Amino acid sequence: MSVSSAQYLNWIDGQWVPAGEGGTRPDVNPANVDEVLGHFPAASRADAARAVEAAARAFPGWARTPMPARGEILRRAADLFEARAAQVAEALTTEEGKTLAEAKGETLRGVSILRYYAGECMQPTGEVYPSAAAGTFLYAERVPLGPVALITPWNFPVAIPVWKIAPALAYGNTVVFKPAELTPLTAWHLVEVLEKAGLPAGVLNLVVGSGSKAGQEMVENAHIKAISFTGSNEVGARIAATATARGAKVQLEMGGKNPTVVLADADLDKAADIALAGAMLSTGQKCTATSRVIVQREVLDGLRERLVARAQAFRVGDGRDPQSQMGPLVSASAEQTVLDYITIGQNEGARLLTGGHKLTGDPYDRGYFVAPTVFDGVTPDMRIAQEEIFGPVVGLIEARDFDEAVRLANHTRYGLSASVVTRDLNLALRFVREIEAGIVHINSQTAGAEPQAPFGGFKGSSSGSREQGKAARDFFTQIKTIYMDPL
Ligand code: NDP
Image (tube, rainbow, N blue to C red; front, side, top):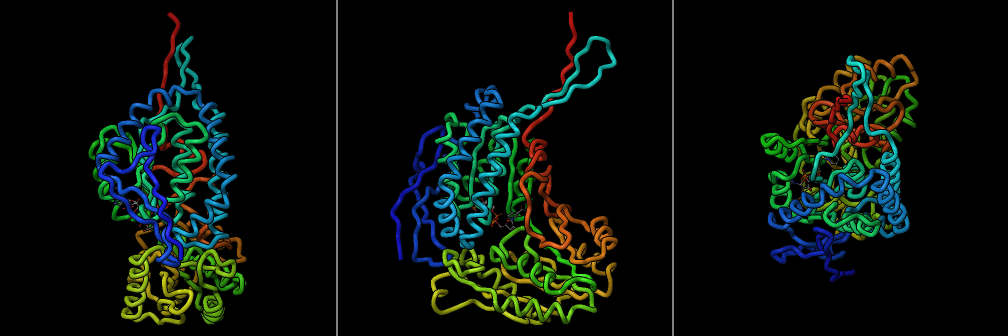
């Protein structure tokens, strides 16, 4: 057991400061709740307001800073973040629970994203148009929005903050960043690295505090011109209502109920590997995780048998143990939600094939471990087929043929990602055309996104323009069109 007494602070206006009211909150390891990683500020609305004011003061200077100079800071931050990647990955695993291999991958992805946006700072920022008037120089320029609020969840506490902060800063905005209260240590590393890379005071501010206080202030504060949020649909809808009512720009990335469709011609070993990885890696706590496996009737028996065997062999444990393939759920309430959904599934008549319970005994007793769970006989309108569970639970749904499989896949309010397993190119192409999802995988799992490509969903999964890659520019800039004539 280790209990750290380290006290971490908020970063506001270029200073490391405690919460104004002095409150703190422990950061706890979900694999072993006796392990405390440190204590973080419980920021109030007033703390968040101070951070917003600092971002507003810093905005004119940062917007005037040449874009290549902004890029140079991001490049230095990438190098510094890479140099401490092992430490950040360890922090990520210890506060969020995912395996060290996953945490290292996520941290290095953060490094790549910083480098990508450093590179974007050397790219054109506008376009020249032919004018109907002789001698008129007509061009459109991308300009920053102002101070922006970035509100992030706990499940990718490095990657999601980086893919919001890096483009926000690259395109000249100043930032108030509120990470999820469950994962402040990785946020602290990221902000410290950006500070050391040379960001001027107030350009980036870190506010660790609850959504209902610090987050709410950021959403309501009139200085904040745009809010990029990733999290649940419920909170996203509330943020959008408040922010759009006062004219702020909003980008929401929310839930998923992502299907993998297995067609009759699929290689069933590969299909089972794909479905299991999609469902169980990161303990199913990915917005792009697979939670429905829709299987063509002819191959249901074969896939079921393979999927269950793999789920039973999947090694669950502390993410720091190199043997572990899956860590704990992030918190007691996340664990309870998952266990509740397992009960709901059973009550609805789905057949529990494996898992379905909390893991007990050493090394599980002090953490939030649930066994990899597979349901069979799931029907399309069951709650476990419609609602996001956000845990290591997957349901098998039978489909008569391709058309029914696609219909079932689309039968949800969400539309983040989807995958199909088939050797038939014609059916793969039809799937791409007919599926209602922002991200489509052919013969790979529903999770997995490269940072240079747009990321986001259809229907209830997302709102506003896409994140990542060049697409991020649409959210973090506005367009000024200039008609310039000689006198
Ligand atoms: P929440 O929506 O509960 O929280 C997300 C963030 O919003 C947290 O920082 C939270 O703060 C903050 N927040 C909560 N209430 C408010 C408020 N009133 N005003 C402003 N901010 C607020 O989601 P979780 O963190 O629990 O993440 C899990 C959910 O996120 C899942 O449903 C998942 O699908 C979704 N998600 C979607 C992704 C995507 O890209 N589509 C990626 C990752 C997750 P606090 O610290 O208090 O929790």
